[in-house]
Amino acid sequence: MLDQSKRIVAYSNMWPQFFNINEDIRGDVFTFHFKDLQLDEKIDQALLLVETVVIPSFEFHINGVLKYLHIKINPWTSAENDIGGVMIMLEDITEVKEKEIALQEHNNELKQFAYITTHDVKSPITNINSFLHFLKEDTSINDPSSLQAIHWIEKSIDKANTKINDLVKVIEQRESSVLLEKIELEPLIEDLKKSITVDELSLNDYLKVEFLGEPYLKSSQKQLITILENLLTNGLRYRKNTIIPQLKLSIDTTSDKQTIISVTDNGVGIDLSVHKQRIFGMFKRANDVIDGNGLGLYLAKQACEQLKGKIEVISELGEGTTFFVYLPK
Image 1 (cartoon, rainbow, N blue to C red):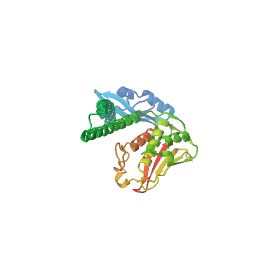
Image 2 (image 1 turned 120 degrees about the vertical axis):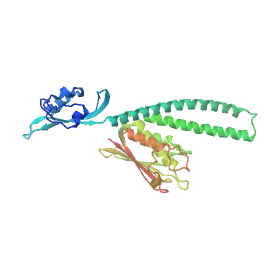
Image 3 (image 1 turned 180 degrees about the vertical axis):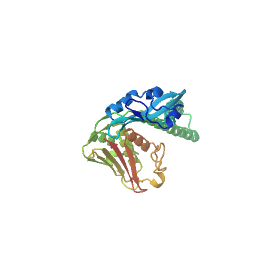
Image 4 (image 1 turned 180 degrees about the horizontal axis):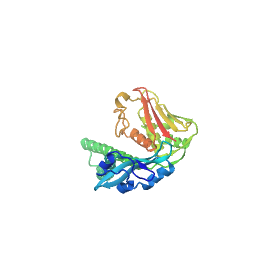
């Protein structure tokens, strides 16, 4: 606690312990002992504007050791309601900050590994594919076992390329920037309806669209397309074979606080008692019978989080699924 002249009025035991001070510092000017904290201007700001000043993360060295502090400076008032000075509260966040830095370094290493892996793996696969093309063109190879082997090698190469392309999608999505702009929803959705096909089924034939409020919103188009494209593709992919697929896209912009997007299908549904905690994970799938890469919901969730939104799901096995996306305005 400091008075208006920045002299120390009182202090907790944490201060001398943390800063290795072995004397009574009451009455001393704060900066005499704590000059390295560089708080003069922040104290003046708190006193002048009578407001709390927060420094989320302050980095400094003490006895050669790097430390991180969360600092809060609060003005205090006397019994007569006059400004008496400030209270300075420190929280040692070194351990938390070190974990954050380690996690960031780890993420950077993973990104670098992913870039290198996709390049280093794709190159030999491309070479193998070229050799396989020569074998397929070789008319002297005509025995059934050799032709079957060529077929299975080709299928394996296709799967490997698909996995590599999936990994590239994840990297590109993580690295994509958020560019807010006014998005006209009708032409965007018309493009999606025409471009999305699953097993030769066109989304255009099975999707109903509902707008509540204005048919536009302010968002980042790349992330919005990722969300809609993956949810709509999922709805068409995980359909029942016994009935005609029905999908409904609803976009509600009537709220002042958020846009609500819902995608509903009449497909196979999800057993949320088993899969709720994993369906948004990378390469996680709730249905092993229908082909899929286990990336669609992961990419949709990641794009949603980039927009500071959230995604939820309600579903019953055999009864269809509805995904809700909430995007703040």
